[in-house]
Length: 151
Length: 151
Length: 151
Length: 151
Image 1 (cartoon, chains in turn orange, yellow, cyan, blue):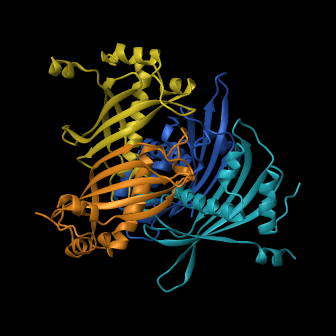
Image 2 (cartoon, rainbow over the protein chains, first blue to last red; image 1 turned 90 degrees about the vertical axis):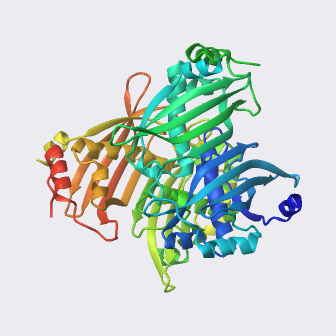
Image 3 (spheres, one colour; image 1 turned 180 degrees about the vertical axis):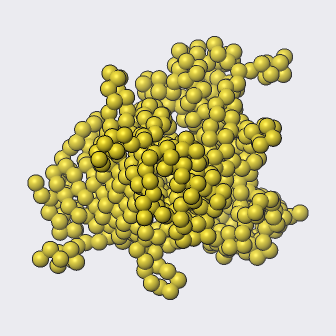
């Protein structure tokens, strides 16, 4: 059942604190700098999957962002502590989709959804051009998230 | 006719050069840093409309990004010269939609679409909360783009 | 004895990991982005002193950098783990001096000094102009570091 | 006479406008982001010398910053127009020294020195290690600035 699978899907959580240097003159995190927090969370996600991003780079591969859609619902401010939830949505031979959500815990203990990101990434070679995702990388993600690569 | 209107729509063009500090270890512009180039182009767009963004700030208003979707088709690299095309898509009482496209001129003189952005922004007060877009701001944009604010 | 005091001086250590987005096309941390890591370390330093930087901002004060000298001895690279050592050097009525050093632990366990920063900061009001450092802030730093404010 | 030479030294001027995304929550340009403006000015400086930085990269060389000292005298703010003055101070076989100053023109037409940077850079290979500055690069700088490489 789709719903069941969705409910059971692996979700990785990283706690971050909004740094001063990413906040702009409007007192909120600059919209382009949310990608810094998302990057840190994905970095920990891949590491915790058992295949750090650095391992991809050692194979002369990158994951290049080809599409990103972001909804900024509530501003994040300097010194806010926030939890970033990262989920793998799908994998194909050379690409994958990721969802990331940032929640801030308010003073009353209530957790508020601030930001939602949907990201499509393609595996690329350092020398240029798309490449298949390394089998070990796919296996790590599949084993931990339960999401199989589909053709 | 929608198509006709779309063809005739005002399009503002800004030429930029990709700075070294925005390029990441993969040799392409970092995906979050495209927002720097888009920002520079919107800044010139508003200035050329006759209402610089600084004028909004003097009224204690910001335009806050609430949704952004970006397609990265071709990487931009250090020292690339690129043209950013900026168009107003729509205006409402407190919000507006903008489309921005980055084109790079290749060595053979051919122009290639590299990046496409769709942006929704809301007018906000420095003190917090949404605000109506200042009438003079709306008038400037309407006069130059031909796009009327709709309720 | 000056040397003795220097040897005994309080040194705060923060472990950081170099994020991908701060690394430039030369594969090393961009020289301007070292200030991100230094900022994170100072933020934790002030928090651990018992007076978070946010507390200064709640009093409508900033610490503004007026002079910074940095020696880049060894590049930091993506995914490097590094320890940032932060020391208060001196305090005056309205200013303070800080020293920060970044050490990377090499594969052989040896620790290598990569970067050295010397920073002078002045306390400023949100409304502009220099201000005295808040007495509670001075007391926290003095109690923990043993460095007295001098006139 | 040293003084005479200094007075006559070649000074390159680049006009920039402070972008919104580089300004922090204190309303001034973030201290680490001044390096963005300095970088843009050096980029134009080398281009105008007749040897764009990209030309160095085509030879698999970088200029790596090894020491930077910056005095922040007056804050730069969003939308400020400023002139960056760039001068070559000295060249050696594998390194060079540069001075950069940012001046803002005030409303009354008076020009104010805001920021002073002193920068030491070393020529490095993409593959690592220091390298001699390419002879053509040295010749371009020497011809335009009158500053000879010294051993």
